Image 1 (cartoon, rainbow, N blue to C red):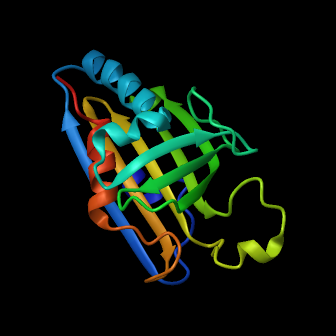
Image 2 (image 1 turned 30 degrees about the vertical axis):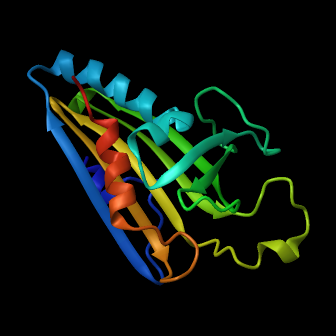
Amino acid sequence: MNAINDHYLVPEQMQGTEKNLQSYITALTVEDAEDMFVEAKDRMLDINSWKKENSFFSAFVLTDAHGKEVHRHAHTGDFIRIANSSGNSLYHWIHIDAIEYDDYPDINTETIAIRIHPSKEPHIKDEDEAYLINSAVSSTIVIERLERRLSSLYHGRNEIIGGTGNQSDAVWQSLINSFLMFE
């Protein structure tokens, strides 16, 4: 299994641009890699701490389905409110569409993936407010352990230049690198 090419949470590329970014490290032992995977998984699911490692945005805030801030690991159906560092009061909203953990002991591999989509504010009911959101745009972040190797991957799909979901590669590369930072 190779998450960079075939993780089942990564949607098909149909329009716009496609991004695939990767960061990896190799542990000394499989046991070390297993421990590091648990730590990387916790970092990925702790959305409120993403800002600590990413200077492109002033805040990542995990909210429930009603837009209320929560302090826990992310769940499917939650939202992420993002404030950019420009200081304006506009937020970007992202819906967490899926979170999946898989363990493949026969090939000494495990993965966790989170798929997100641009969204309107969770408490806005008026469909007229959603016209700016392209539902085909998605981002999937995968952490994979294959024996001693840990990979952190970003897959952007169906991104439209100047449209929703079009963040710079540097933003995503910084984020996926942060999941694999160990002392």
